[in-house]
Image (cartoon, rainbow over all chains, first blue to last red):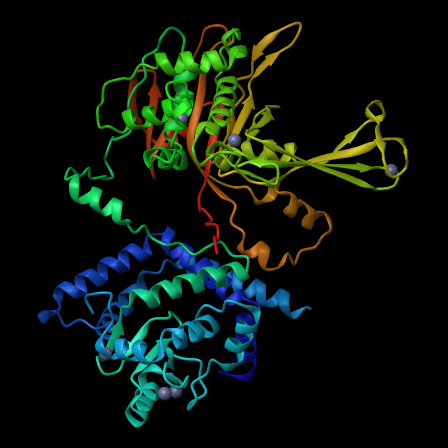
Length: 93
Length: 486
Ligand SMILES: [Zn+2]
Ligand SMILES: [Zn+2]
Ligand SMILES: [Zn+2]
Ligand SMILES: [Zn+2]
Ligand SMILES: [Zn+2]
Ligand SMILES: [Zn+2]
């Protein structure tokens, strides 16, 4: 991370806006059914695992690429747009 | 990791040090329950070795050492023999000896409480938590073996209503209420518990029974004799109303239900800042703001009144949004309608503007298609389009204020507020004023529409719904906010 990035990151946490954006993202992912899809992926991954020895790490490595690909473009765009607008309006102060 | 009782390593740790280390780290660096905590998190959440904020930063539960999961956390666990870590993003506990995350009910409860506190400290609505059955409910689920699967093609909840002699104006409102998602959840969850004194006379109990009958799985049309009689006796002005207007019936029904909610054991005197908190008001009540601005001194006098629905003038072809835009436009009150300005201490000309101060969960719109005057009673069949998804933001007081002051940087509030609504019911009046008939379209599930024509229920599609004339339009808030109780 560059110095500027770090400052922006710290500021987002400090103002609580990071939490707000996270909450917005969480909502959108639930609304569009992403969370349910990922839950099904996890279920399948557990079923496929031999010997019942599933750890979070194996789930993460298996499911993450597919889960990432399933995030709808509209959600990415909305978040990006809102974060951009938000950071720009912050700078002017 | 099958049960909620942790692992031996976590249990030993808890026996020695209690839950406080977890509680404190979680409150400061995971959930941030205060502004002070956010300050710490913003500046301190970096790996002690590589100074990066991630990926997957964990804190050692023994010595509050921060390390990234893949490298420096594992390294710390080997050199210091500290085995328990908190994931600083999600708050889960990792045991390096078990090499996996550990479930522990006690810590999970602490995390939930901290998250609620964190949300509250930011003025956010409480995070969504999925339903977990309590002991009673779990027992009931084991006892009652019969399951009813809800599939995309299900027709559960759909039943016709017999017409008891021009009672279609009433049937279409009952269908609308039965298919109001939050009201359905309230009644199917048996949330109305009546006082003994209300027995047999309580209309809310009657509606509760009606919901059970609608969702019993039976398909034969229902007859509403008793309900009709009860509403009739409680809203006498309706009985004498010859027009038998669906809109009047809707408002009268809400009014009677709101009064009868006081029969509920838990609903007694539940008032918050002078406003009734019964289920009807929780779902249907919004706040209408009226700003009267003196043209002389620009002094503003503001009043806010509760509303159950919004009646809109139909002035030529247009859209619902255009009607709302007109409804919330500042209007000059001419010299014939001077209002006493408390500032100028004189009668002055003024402008008046209505905006929505708070939005109800269900937004109900009444298109004024019936014109009653001394000379003539007529119906206006002008086409007014209405959308399936409606954003109410432009009609809100806060938004109008921001636009008027050209204050474009409406900050995070503007970014995060969510005022989207989805259409879920439309009541139509067919035919002429004196020989008319009412039908209703209801959304049973997302994207699944039905037409209710008294005892007849037929499948419909959204295009057909949006093409209909529209007399009463019902929108449900798309995303619900949860209240923080901590
Ligand atoms: Zn590191
Ligand atoms: Zn340590
Ligand atoms: Zn362990
Ligand atoms: Zn009752
Ligand atoms: Zn009430
Ligand atoms: Zn004045």
